[in-house]
Length: 226
Image 1 (cartoon, rainbow, N blue to C red):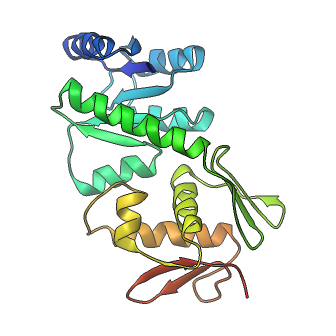
Image 2: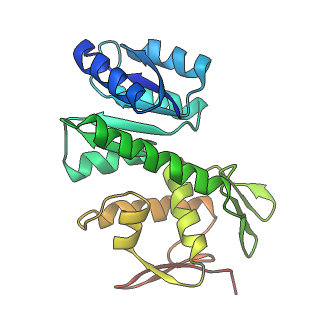
């Protein structure tokens, strides 16, 4: 059983999902507006939040940013938009997954279980070390030569995925699928931009790499400095 928070302003949808998710064994609290949802999230500390974007008092994207500033609770975004760029934007903003409206309670429940399963796997994942780079998946922290590196959720996921395959070339298509959960091509620029941000935070550039090495036409490789 998971403790869920459903932030949805439509009473009919909210009540239908509340009933269906409770029937599937979850303990579910609900909020009909963004600020009410934020207060409930901080007070109740749910295992996962299902967040609708079309809220009456605040855009759901802004609420997602507010949540990410104070909590690492997994968030599944419910959206009516199914464009790839919108999906990538939501995942970059800190969402762990998304469902496109209309969706069934069974589909949402499957997404919830998958996100929580990934979180449980991360807690049991050992720390990774590549040269002076140390990554703690459970705490989601990174240090470089003893100094903490402040990364966004997506930057951390990108670095962690590359560290799990240290010394191997990882394609952009794999990164989009595994890190952004976008199982098709067309958004390579998103990977390039995040790699650029990550390089800057690691104190290197594409022209003078230390850890992140681009293999032209193939992908990127994380390896310890020579």
